[in-house]
Structure formats: C-alpha cells, structure tokens
Image (cartoon, rainbow, N blue to C red; front, side, top):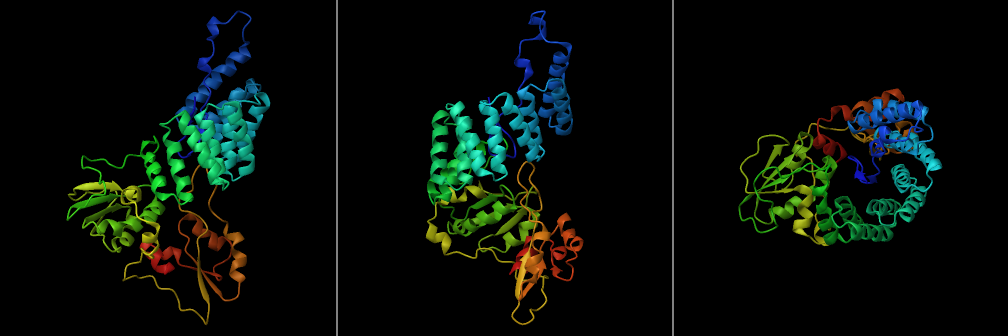
Length: 407
C-alpha cells in the first residue's frame, strides 16, 4: 500500500498501522509484555497525530514508542516519513537506515530512503536504494516510478522513460507517473506527447481543480470574437513560463481575459493580446470558454520554431518608477537574488547564502544590485554588504517592477 504525499511527486510508503496486527485480546496469554503493549499504544497515538498533520507531536510520540521498543522497524520508517514532511531530511535518512538494519529488504523503506536521497540530490545513492526496492518488489508500480524519478533527475531521460512506461503497464491510471513521463518527454524534446501526458496532473489529489464553473474548457477551435478566460495554475513561475502561449490564442480572434495573482497582474496586462486581467479569487467577467494556462501548449501544439521566434514575450509596462543609477564607465550591472520567496517544506532549500556570493562583488567592472525581497533581504545588512550591493529589492512592489529593474 502506498500513497502520494502532498508536496512531493514521489510515492511514499505511508505510516504502518499497528491496528492490522492481531488484537491483544486474541493473543495467547504468553503474549506481549506490558512494555510492548504500551509501545503499541504510543505507536498508534503517533500514527493518529501523523495523519492529522500534527508532526511535532507525532515525532515526540514516535520517539517514545522507540524508547519502549527500539527493535520495531515500522516505527523508524514512520518517524522518517514524519521528519521528511518537516524538511528534516538528514534525520529522515538516518531513520530509514535504522529501519533497514532491522528489515534490510523492505521495499517500502528502501523507496523512502531513495526518495529522500533524490530530493537531497544524492542521485547515485538514490538509484542504488531504489533499484534494490524494485528488485524486492518488481510488481510495485510505485517502486518502479520512484526509480524513474531518480534516473530522470540524474540526467538519464531514456532509462527514466522506460521506468515510467513500465510502471504504467502495472497501473495504467497512475496519474503522477503519467505527469512525470510527460515532463521527461519534454526534456527530450518530444513536446506534443509530453504535454499530452502532462494533462494527467489534473487527476492528482494534491492539485486543486482549476475549472470551477460550468463553462466549457476550450478545445483549440476558432474563437471568432468569443471571450476566453485563461486561468492561473501553479505558481508565479509557471504563469510566467506559460504566458508565452497567450499571443497564439489571440491569433484565434479571441477576447482574452487572464486570471492571475496581483503580484504579476501589471506584467501580464502589458502583454500584447491581453484584453483584461482579473485578480485571482476576484469577480470574473462574463466569458464563453476557459482553460488552465498550463494546458495551452497541449491544445495549441505549436512547433518549436514558432516559440523560438517570439522572444522576448514579456516586457515591463512602459511607465515605471524603477530607475537605477547610471553606470560609471563600462560597468556591468548585475542583479542578485539569493533566496526564493516561499521555501518548500520537505525539499532541498533552493537558496544560495549571500555569504557565498560576496566574492562575486570583488570582480572588476561589476556593479551589483540586490533584487532580494522578503525576510532574506536582511542578509545584505547582516553580511555588511550595504556599500557593495545596492538595494533595489525594497523598492519592488510587484513583478512588473522587478522586470523593469532587470531590463
């Protein structure tokens, strides 16, 4: 039994449930000791807390259960799953390794270990662990899928595709596997088939539905003056990436309304072909058809040459209050941003400490500007870089300002 964990694309073996064991009342009189019974009770409590998302309390309960019964591999595995959900990846790996000492051939624990190693970019170790999991459970679509993820992230798209296709022969309706097969095909340049498989993302339980009205989804047919609502999907980066397809929709003689986050609304409104922008969650104007923005390439199926000839496709608004000081001589003006605005729990931190970038500021002919916003903008002062790194981030109100600064 496996389950896809929200926030991760791999399939994680869920907490073991002691309720599947023989009830204490049905065991022989020479059954478990009081200590074992208390360990089972605390283990069940930990699982209940874990499933409710109360991870701190669950970790404490798992730890108490281990103190009572340190020979239970399932407790170590569950503790590892819980720690990974908290982003404590190194500790999770240690738990999985302790579990494997007790159960060296457990496919679920091997998969969990391999998944976490993959997230930490230890790809070779991940492939070793996940390959063993597949050997232990060759008929498990989750195990084969997880191995495919590690191979893909290690750069072996061909073997990854083989794994994903093999997993789908074991379970054809495996939505996460279809989606990752799609992204792998895109990496190989097979865009048409890749975007077709990518449509399976809408069947993932952790992906919120986008089409929330009775209006039909656009199928790519001529619009001839109809109004199409292009809906935001994913994060701001996804919206900006797929906005390149909006001008192709305009070629179908459409009146285009784009639903998007306020932070990106001015930038999207400045795009050619966009007739109206509405804020995410706001009142929608009348429209005839709708489509999630990440489904546009599947519907439009443009050729590579079409997209290559339409760059840049984003420009800041003509009127901007963002001005940088003039360059002194032949200075190269460079913008630095060292941390994403929203860190992802359970995943590797995508930031780069400012302390590791300071030496860049010594390169002759470079004038550096900070584009960092949010809490990590304070790193500039903490690292005594005020005189070396001019602050622009504090003046940015949205992504249109950011685009103006970059341009």
